[in-house]
Structure formats: structure tokens, C-alpha cells
Length: 256
Image 1 (cartoon, one colour):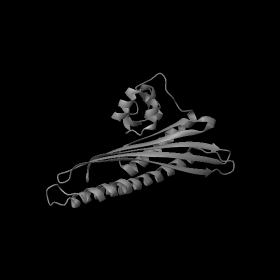
Image 2: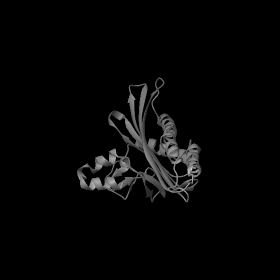
Image 3: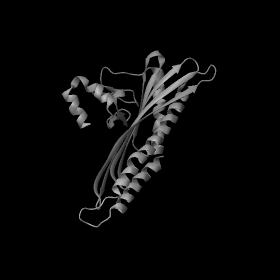
Image 4: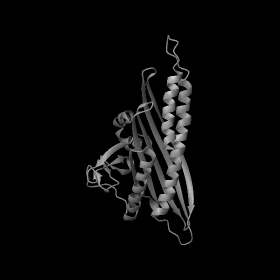
């Protein structure tokens, strides 16, 4: 994020485009009226203020800013309640937020966000999981709804161990998905319909992201580090590295 700020300072006219195109760690803001935390992103920002999904107010206050229509606000409120339960069940902590906004022709978009910090768990000194799921939802004709999902995750882990020293394990992944749902005759897509379909896709995508990170980053890292030796010593670090990586992989399995 420091590099992004530096580039934005050099080319201020492109700062907003950079912030939308580059994955950044999520930041937390506090809704002082609801006394609840929420996540900041480009989809709830207006200048230096950010809209809370809990009270639909901006912090710090601003005289402008976007607000969803009453119908989409009802969907946003319901989605935040359901996603908060999901966060508690799967992550046992952290912060989640859902933001919804209009698109043309009565369609809409949504952003599901989760941020979870990890400290002092087996094998990990500090760590963070930031995931973002952006939906484009289009109602096509009278019987079909198309959900296009773009997801990204930023994983950061810092490991400290007397034998192996300091290790910084960080990475990011992006994935896409699409689903088409058919409506029954004379049925209209209501709040429950959208939440069930988007929720199912988010849950499936989170599992896919965790599996991909485990395969792409953790197992490859373990393979490399298990062959590491201390310089000038006949000490094999493989057991320590295997223990650390096993602890990290256990964290992923517990969330799946």
C-alpha cells in the first residue's frame, strides 16, 4: 500500500484508477453510532469518508456520498446479517462488510468483504486474511438471473522461530465464477433468492481460494524450505519447517 500511495502522489490524476485496479489490504473503520467495526473499500468511499453498512452513514460525516435505493438497502442490511454469521462460523473473529449499489437497467452490484488477523497461533507470529468478492447481478428477461463473481484474497503471514529465524509468507490470488439461476413462473428475485445464490457462490469461492493458496504457496514453500540447511553447520532445518508449515496448513483446514 505504501508503493501505491507513492505512485498516486506522483500521478494524482490517476490515483482513483490505481486504487480501483490494485488489490490493497483492507482497513477497518468504526461506526460510532452502532458501535461496530466495518471495512473500508472503494465501493463505500466518498473522498476521505466511508459509508457504514450498519447505519448507512458516512464516517467521518460528509454532506455528499452515495446511498443505495430503499430496496437495495434492505438487501444490503439482510446480506450483512447473514455474512456476519458466516464470518463468525468460519473465521471465529475478524470483520465483515457487504456493500450494494445500483447498475443500469435495474441491475445491481455487491461487494462481500472479510478481514481476519491471526496472532500467536501455532507456527504463525502474525498473519492476515483479506478477501473481497465483487458481484455483478443482471436480471435477464423474466426468468433468468446471472451472477458474475470476481474474487481476490491477500494472505500475509510472519513466522518467527529460534531455529529458522524470520519468514514472511505473503501472496495474492484472483479467481472468477459465473452462475445462472432460473426463476419459476411468475416468480420475482427477492432478498432471500439473491442472498442464497450469492452466499453459496461466496462460500464455494472461499473454499477454492483456501485450497489454491495451500497448493500454490504453502506446499511449494514447504518443499523449498524443507531442503534448507544452516550455513556452516550440519543442522537440518527440515523438521522445524515441516512443523511450522503443518501448523499453517492446519489453520486453512479448520476454515474449510
